[in-house]
Length: 289
Image (cartoon, rainbow, N blue to C red):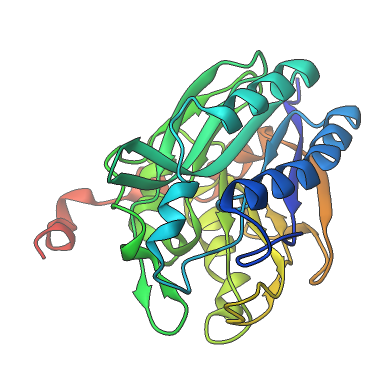
Protein backbone atom coordinates (compact mmCIF):
# COMPACT_ATOMS: atom_id res chain seq x y z
CA UNK A 1 0.00 0.00 0.00
CA UNK A 2 1.45 3.35 -1.05
CA UNK A 3 1.99 6.12 1.49
CA UNK A 4 1.20 9.20 -0.54
CA UNK A 5 1.49 12.58 1.11
CA UNK A 6 0.38 15.96 -0.22
CA UNK A 7 2.59 18.74 1.06
CA UNK A 8 2.71 22.50 0.63
CA UNK A 9 5.29 25.28 0.95
CA UNK A 10 4.46 28.99 1.19
CA UNK A 11 6.93 31.64 0.02
CA UNK A 12 5.97 35.22 0.76
CA UNK A 13 7.08 38.85 0.47
CA UNK A 14 6.48 41.31 3.28
CA UNK A 15 3.53 43.72 3.02
CA UNK A 16 5.02 45.99 5.70
CA UNK A 17 8.51 46.47 7.04
CA UNK A 18 10.60 48.52 9.45
CA UNK A 19 9.50 52.15 9.54
CA UNK A 20 6.08 51.39 8.07
CA UNK A 21 4.35 50.56 11.33
CA UNK A 22 4.97 49.17 14.79
CA UNK A 23 6.48 45.73 15.17
CA UNK A 24 3.09 44.41 16.27
CA UNK A 25 1.45 45.92 13.17
CA UNK A 26 4.17 44.52 10.89
CA UNK A 27 3.71 41.02 12.33
CA UNK A 28 -0.07 41.20 12.11
CA UNK A 29 0.09 42.32 8.46
CA UNK A 30 2.32 39.37 7.56
CA UNK A 31 0.08 36.89 9.35
CA UNK A 32 -3.01 38.27 7.64
CA UNK A 33 -1.26 37.98 4.28
CA UNK A 34 -0.48 34.32 5.00
CA UNK A 35 -3.93 33.24 6.14
CA UNK A 36 -5.55 33.03 2.65
CA UNK A 37 -2.59 30.93 1.45
CA UNK A 38 -2.82 28.64 4.47
CA UNK A 39 -6.54 28.24 3.92
CA UNK A 40 -5.97 27.58 0.22
CA UNK A 41 -3.59 24.79 1.20
CA UNK A 42 -6.20 23.31 3.52
CA UNK A 43 -8.90 23.46 0.86
CA UNK A 44 -6.58 21.69 -1.61
CA UNK A 45 -6.10 18.83 0.81
CA UNK A 46 -2.54 19.63 1.80
CA UNK A 47 -1.59 17.33 4.67
CA UNK A 48 1.72 18.91 5.72
CA UNK A 49 2.42 22.63 5.23
CA UNK A 50 5.62 24.52 5.97
CA UNK A 51 6.09 28.29 6.15
CA UNK A 52 9.28 30.32 5.61
CA UNK A 53 11.91 31.26 8.21
CA UNK A 54 10.49 33.71 10.82
CA UNK A 55 7.37 33.70 8.66
CA UNK A 56 5.43 36.42 10.49
CA UNK A 57 7.76 39.33 9.77
CA UNK A 58 10.67 40.63 7.73
CA UNK A 59 14.14 39.15 7.95
CA UNK A 60 15.40 41.80 10.37
CA UNK A 61 18.91 40.37 10.88
CA UNK A 62 20.70 42.71 8.43
CA UNK A 63 20.42 45.32 11.19
CA UNK A 64 21.39 45.19 14.85
CA UNK A 65 18.46 46.96 16.42
CA UNK A 66 17.35 45.45 19.71
CA UNK A 67 13.86 46.85 19.14
CA UNK A 68 13.27 43.64 17.15
CA UNK A 69 13.58 41.61 20.35
CA UNK A 70 9.96 42.67 20.78
CA UNK A 71 9.05 40.43 17.83
CA UNK A 72 9.85 37.31 19.84
CA UNK A 73 6.98 35.48 21.52
CA UNK A 74 6.46 32.47 23.78
CA UNK A 75 5.38 29.02 22.60
CA UNK A 76 2.49 28.58 22.82
CA UNK A 77 1.63 32.20 22.13
CA UNK A 78 -0.62 34.34 19.95
CA UNK A 79 0.78 33.13 16.63
CA UNK A 80 1.06 29.45 17.47
CA UNK A 81 -2.45 29.37 18.95
CA UNK A 82 -3.81 30.78 15.68
CA UNK A 83 -1.86 28.18 13.69
CA UNK A 84 -3.16 25.43 15.98
CA UNK A 85 -6.71 26.50 15.14
CA UNK A 86 -5.97 26.44 11.39
CA UNK A 87 -4.24 23.06 11.64
CA UNK A 88 -7.25 21.57 13.40
CA UNK A 89 -9.72 23.23 11.01
CA UNK A 90 -8.07 21.68 7.95
CA UNK A 91 -6.72 18.47 9.53
CA UNK A 92 -3.31 19.69 8.38
CA UNK A 93 0.14 19.48 9.97
CA UNK A 94 1.76 22.94 9.97
CA UNK A 95 5.47 23.72 10.50
CA UNK A 96 5.55 27.27 11.89
CA UNK A 97 8.93 29.07 12.03
CA UNK A 98 8.87 32.02 14.46
CA UNK A 99 11.09 34.11 16.70
CA UNK A 100 10.80 32.41 20.10
CA UNK A 101 11.15 33.93 23.55
CA UNK A 102 11.83 31.21 26.09
CA UNK A 103 12.14 33.89 28.75
CA UNK A 104 13.21 37.56 28.66
CA UNK A 105 16.64 37.75 27.07
CA UNK A 106 16.64 34.11 25.88
CA UNK A 107 15.60 34.11 22.24
CA UNK A 108 15.73 31.43 19.53
CA UNK A 109 15.08 31.01 15.81
CA UNK A 110 12.52 28.23 16.13
CA UNK A 111 10.10 26.10 14.12
CA UNK A 112 7.04 24.71 15.89
CA UNK A 113 5.53 21.47 14.57
CA UNK A 114 1.75 21.35 14.99
CA UNK A 115 -0.08 18.09 14.32
CA UNK A 116 -3.30 17.80 12.31
CA UNK A 117 -5.43 17.85 15.47
CA UNK A 118 -3.90 21.14 16.60
CA UNK A 119 -1.51 19.62 19.13
CA UNK A 120 1.96 21.12 19.43
CA UNK A 121 4.27 18.12 18.99
CA UNK A 122 7.43 20.06 19.75
CA UNK A 123 9.91 22.45 18.24
CA UNK A 124 13.28 22.68 16.57
CA UNK A 125 15.67 25.49 17.41
CA UNK A 126 18.14 26.54 14.73
CA UNK A 127 21.52 25.14 15.71
CA UNK A 128 23.94 26.92 13.38
CA UNK A 129 23.76 30.70 13.80
CA UNK A 130 25.60 32.85 11.22
CA UNK A 131 27.20 36.20 11.88
CA UNK A 132 28.38 37.23 8.45
CA UNK A 133 28.70 40.73 6.98
CA UNK A 134 26.95 42.17 5.21
CA UNK A 135 23.43 41.31 6.16
CA UNK A 136 23.35 38.24 8.41
CA UNK A 137 23.96 39.33 12.01
CA UNK A 138 21.98 36.51 13.58
CA UNK A 139 24.11 36.05 16.69
CA UNK A 140 22.81 39.44 17.82
CA UNK A 141 19.26 38.04 17.86
CA UNK A 142 19.39 34.28 18.47
CA UNK A 143 20.95 31.83 20.89
CA UNK A 144 22.13 28.58 19.26
CA UNK A 145 19.60 25.78 19.49
CA UNK A 146 19.74 23.36 22.41
CA UNK A 147 17.21 20.69 21.41
CA UNK A 148 19.34 18.62 19.04
CA UNK A 149 17.74 17.30 15.85
CA UNK A 150 14.29 16.04 16.82
CA UNK A 151 11.96 14.17 14.49
CA UNK A 152 8.20 14.39 15.04
CA UNK A 153 5.71 11.61 14.35
CA UNK A 154 2.87 13.57 12.78
CA UNK A 155 -0.40 12.12 11.55
CA UNK A 156 1.02 11.72 8.04
CA UNK A 157 4.80 11.29 8.25
CA UNK A 158 7.89 11.57 10.42
CA UNK A 159 8.97 15.19 10.05
CA UNK A 160 12.26 16.92 10.83
CA UNK A 161 13.28 20.57 10.46
CA UNK A 162 16.56 22.25 9.50
CA UNK A 163 16.56 26.08 9.28
CA UNK A 164 18.32 28.14 6.59
CA UNK A 165 22.06 28.36 7.47
CA UNK A 166 21.82 24.86 8.96
CA UNK A 167 21.77 23.53 5.41
CA UNK A 168 25.50 24.22 5.06
CA UNK A 169 26.22 21.54 7.67
CA UNK A 170 25.81 17.89 6.60
CA UNK A 171 26.21 16.58 10.15
CA UNK A 172 22.77 17.71 11.31
CA UNK A 173 21.17 16.51 8.09
CA UNK A 174 22.56 13.04 8.84
CA UNK A 175 21.30 13.22 12.45
CA UNK A 176 17.80 13.89 11.15
CA UNK A 177 18.02 10.80 8.98
CA UNK A 178 19.32 8.67 11.83
CA UNK A 179 16.46 9.94 13.97
CA UNK A 180 13.97 8.62 11.44
CA UNK A 181 12.95 11.65 9.36
CA UNK A 182 10.96 10.89 6.22
CA UNK A 183 10.53 14.54 5.25
CA UNK A 184 12.87 17.35 6.30
CA UNK A 185 11.70 20.95 5.87
CA UNK A 186 14.19 23.78 5.52
CA UNK A 187 12.54 27.20 5.94
CA UNK A 188 15.00 29.85 4.79
CA UNK A 189 15.72 33.50 4.05
CA UNK A 190 18.44 33.67 1.41
CA UNK A 191 19.28 36.34 -1.15
CA UNK A 192 20.81 36.31 -4.61
CA UNK A 193 24.59 36.36 -4.58
CA UNK A 194 27.36 34.30 -3.02
CA UNK A 195 25.36 31.28 -1.86
CA UNK A 196 22.66 31.14 -4.54
CA UNK A 197 24.28 28.29 -6.45
CA UNK A 198 24.27 26.25 -3.24
CA UNK A 199 20.46 26.51 -2.98
CA UNK A 200 19.99 23.74 -5.55
CA UNK A 201 23.12 21.83 -4.57
CA UNK A 202 23.22 21.24 -0.82
CA UNK A 203 19.66 20.18 -0.07
CA UNK A 204 19.38 17.68 -2.96
CA UNK A 205 22.71 16.33 -1.70
CA UNK A 206 21.29 15.94 1.83
CA UNK A 207 18.18 14.23 0.45
CA UNK A 208 20.26 11.78 -1.60
CA UNK A 209 22.86 11.09 1.09
CA UNK A 210 20.18 10.41 3.69
CA UNK A 211 17.38 8.93 1.61
CA UNK A 212 14.54 11.27 2.57
CA UNK A 213 12.34 13.94 0.99
CA UNK A 214 12.97 17.63 1.60
CA UNK A 215 10.79 20.72 1.30
CA UNK A 216 12.90 23.87 0.94
CA UNK A 217 11.33 27.32 1.35
CA UNK A 218 12.74 30.78 0.59
CA UNK A 219 11.00 34.13 0.89
CA UNK A 220 10.65 36.57 -2.05
CA UNK A 221 11.23 40.25 -2.74
CA UNK A 222 13.49 43.04 -1.47
CA UNK A 223 12.96 44.05 2.15
CA UNK A 224 13.41 47.70 3.07
CA UNK A 225 15.13 49.48 4.70
CA UNK A 226 17.91 46.87 4.74
CA UNK A 227 18.02 46.20 0.98
CA UNK A 228 20.53 43.36 1.26
CA UNK A 229 19.39 41.83 -2.03
CA UNK A 230 16.61 39.90 -3.67
CA UNK A 231 15.07 37.00 -1.80
CA UNK A 232 14.68 34.78 -4.84
CA UNK A 233 11.99 32.31 -3.83
CA UNK A 234 12.55 29.14 -5.85
CA UNK A 235 11.09 26.98 -3.09
CA UNK A 236 11.12 23.32 -4.05
CA UNK A 237 10.60 19.67 -3.17
CA UNK A 238 13.37 17.14 -3.69
CA UNK A 239 13.11 13.36 -3.50
CA UNK A 240 15.42 10.73 -1.91
CA UNK A 241 17.30 10.42 -5.20
CA UNK A 242 18.24 14.09 -4.98
CA UNK A 243 15.95 15.09 -7.84
CA UNK A 244 13.94 18.33 -7.62
CA UNK A 245 10.43 17.42 -8.76
CA UNK A 246 8.43 20.57 -8.04
CA UNK A 247 9.56 24.19 -7.81
CA UNK A 248 8.04 27.64 -7.25
CA UNK A 249 8.79 30.90 -9.03
CA UNK A 250 11.61 33.28 -8.15
CA UNK A 251 9.63 36.46 -7.69
CA UNK A 252 6.07 36.01 -6.47
CA UNK A 253 4.06 34.97 -3.44
CA UNK A 254 3.16 31.35 -3.97
CA UNK A 255 1.76 28.19 -2.46
CA UNK A 256 3.66 25.25 -3.93
CA UNK A 257 1.84 21.92 -3.61
CA UNK A 258 3.17 18.50 -4.50
CA UNK A 259 2.15 14.90 -3.85
CA UNK A 260 4.73 12.17 -3.33
CA UNK A 261 4.97 8.60 -2.10
CA UNK A 262 6.95 7.92 1.07
CA UNK A 263 7.48 4.33 -0.07
CA UNK A 264 10.15 5.75 -2.37
CA UNK A 265 12.37 6.05 0.72
CA UNK A 266 12.46 2.27 1.14
CA UNK A 267 13.03 1.76 -2.57
CA UNK A 268 16.00 4.14 -2.64
CA UNK A 269 17.56 2.85 0.57
CA UNK A 270 17.33 -0.70 -0.76
CA UNK A 271 19.64 0.38 -3.60
CA UNK A 272 21.92 2.88 -1.86
CA UNK A 273 22.87 1.24 1.44
CA UNK A 274 24.38 4.32 3.05
CA UNK A 275 23.00 3.52 6.50
CA UNK A 276 24.31 -0.05 6.37
CA UNK A 277 27.74 1.02 5.15
CA UNK A 278 28.32 3.92 7.53
CA UNK A 279 31.46 3.72 9.70
CA UNK A 280 30.70 5.98 12.68
CA UNK A 281 33.62 4.57 14.66
CA UNK A 282 35.94 6.18 12.10
CA UNK A 283 34.38 9.66 12.32
CA UNK A 284 35.46 10.61 15.85
CA UNK A 285 37.63 13.48 14.65
CA UNK A 286 34.49 15.32 13.54
CA UNK A 287 33.55 15.99 17.16
CA UNK A 288 37.05 16.66 18.50
CA UNK A 289 37.20 20.32 17.43
